[in-house]
Amino acid sequence: MNDLAVGLAGERVLLLAEKALVWPAQRMLVVADIHFGKAAAFRSLGVPVPRGTTTENLLALDALVERYGVRHIVFLGDFLHARAAHARATQAALLAWRRRHPDLALTLVRGNHDRHAGDPARELGIGLVDEPHNLGPFSFCHHPDLAAPGYVLAGHVHPVFVLATRFDALRLPCFVVGTSRMILPSFGAFTGGHVVTPGAGDQIYVSSGEAIHSVR
Image (tube, rainbow, N blue to C red; front, side, top):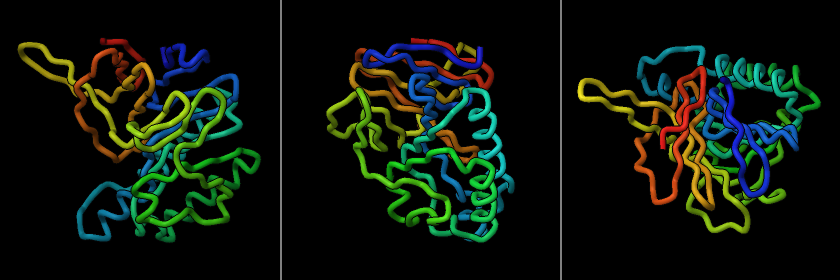
C-alpha cells in the first residue's frame, strides 16, 4: 500500500511511501527537508554529483498533488539547501513548476538551511512563517524538540531505521511517531539520512519506496 492511515491528535493522517504526509481533512501535503539545489551546491564546490534531482523532486510533488487532490503544501523547513540553490537552472525549474500549480497554496516553515540560503523567490508565492506554525491540533516545525502548543510535525533529522538480520542490514527512511511529536523523513532525492534510536513510546514506520510498514 502506498499510504497508511494513523490517528494523531484526534485527526486522521496518511503516511506516504513517498516520504510525506497527507492531512485529508485539509487536503494538505506535508513535506520535510526537500533541499532544493543541494546537488547544485555540491557541484559549485567541485564535487561530482548527479544532475536532475530538482526535476525528480518536482515530479514527485506533481504526482502526490494529483493523487490526493492537494490544495496546500506545507514545507517543514530546508526548502533551499544553500545560496547556490538560487542558481538560474534551479530557479527556472521551480518557477515553471509553480506556473503549473497557480492555485496551490504553499507555506514554508523556515529551517536552519533556509536561514543560510535566504528566502525563496517572491515569484514562487510561498507564504513564509517561523516555527511553530500552529493550525488546528498541529504545530508545524522544522526542529522536533521545539516547545509548541500542538502536536508537533517536524523534520530536520532525516530519520532512517536499520532493519538487520545476522547476515545483512537495510537502512530505510522512516517516520518516528511519539506521543507529542512526529519526525518526518526527508523528502528530497539527494539528502541522506541519520539512523535513529526510538525513544520510549516511539513508533517507527519505514518506507520501502512502495509501501509503509510498522516495525516498532
